Length: 279
Image (cartoon, rainbow, N blue to C red; front, side):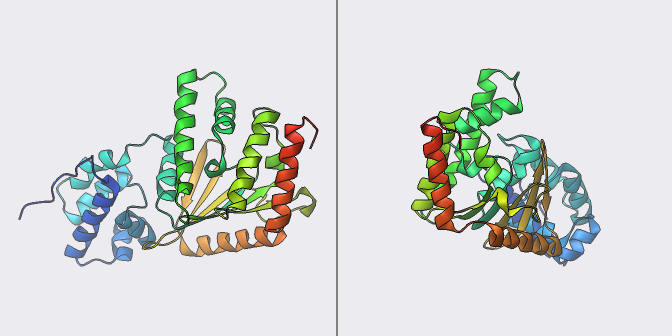
């Protein structure tokens, strides 16, 4: 019997790779959990691979070829599916969020990527690497702003962002850049394109003081969580852990200002920045 054909890189490599994985697994009569045990990953991870919401790693592709007897198919095509314009640590989540039906995010220190303006994104990227060439900063900024086009759709994905007040007070790129950035967020909130709440400094200690959090839901795959820190990140697919992190997000929502009060605060800070006053 002929083996599967190599994937066409011009199509959707991850989706096609996932479809081939599902067919190969079913031919072997294995469940997602059973296959996961054989290649030392969770059944949820196999489900995400099959749905095309996760990036297949080279080590996993080798094990899958061995277990499913696919003659090196997954190793050959893993490279095509892994091509990305994003840095390695962030590529998986950037491509995964594009398939999400709902995104819930807590941002403790800066305005999250999906809500950034080009000038704010440039300032953040320049701060990440003060010695990078201008063309490199431009490429990073373009990639970040391309992600924001997810919000061009009138309803999908549903975006719910809890922004720490500290992120709004940190003057990133100058006062004019901050005024524009906050007006942009206020505009998304007024148009009901994003649910935005501010977690005030006066709320004191809270459950997510350790770092940023992103939760993603999909139509045909389990939920995922993403935990980010300095120049690194971790995708979490364990259902119990994701459930705990969802509860943590709910606690943040409960401690945050209402949407109306958050919008008023954001608009007020934008005006303060625009008039060169101290917020």
